[in-house]
Amino acid sequence: MKYKKGKTWFVYGPKGQAKVLVAINKNDKSKPMENNLTDYYHSQNDLRANAIRIFPKTFSGTTICMRVELYGCLAGVEIVPTTQPIAQKVVNVSIRFTSIKWNDELSDKKSKEFAETSKRIIEAVETVYSESESFRNAEVLTL
View 1 (cartoon, rainbow, N blue to C red):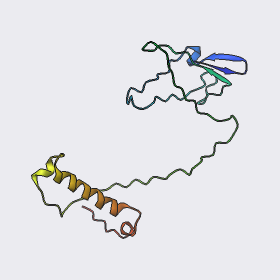
View 2 (view 1 turned 30 degrees about the horizontal axis):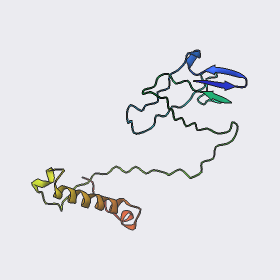
View 3 (view 1 turned 90 degrees about the horizontal axis):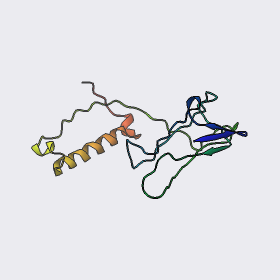
View 4 (view 1 turned 120 degrees about the horizontal axis):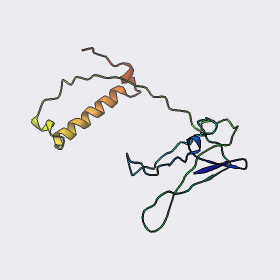
C-alpha cells in the first residue's frame, strides 16, 4: 500500500519497508479483518493522506476481487459521537439455589429438564438484576 501526502507518495510500513496488511480474519473467517493505519513517517497513530493506493500481493482463483472499506474524517474537525456512549455496569454475583430439586437429567445439557431449569434461572436473575423496583429492594445474602 502507498499513501499520498501533498504530492509525495510514501510506502506504508515502518522505515519505508512495505507492511503487508492481512485481509483474512484468522480468528473468525465470517468477520472482516480490520487494520488500523499508522503514519510511520511522522510517528502518529492516525494516517492522514490525500490518496491511497492498494497493491494486492496474492489472490486465489482465476480472477482478482477485493473489497475495501476506508473510514475516516476530515483533518482538523472535532469528532462528535452521534449517540451517547452506553455506560456499562459490572455486577459480580454469587447465587445459591435452594428451591431446585436435583434430577439426574439436569447434568445432561441436551435434556429438556436442563433447558427448562436454565430458562427459569436466567429469568429469575434478569428479574432481580434489571433496573426495576425489585432490584432496588433486593436482599443480599453474604455466604
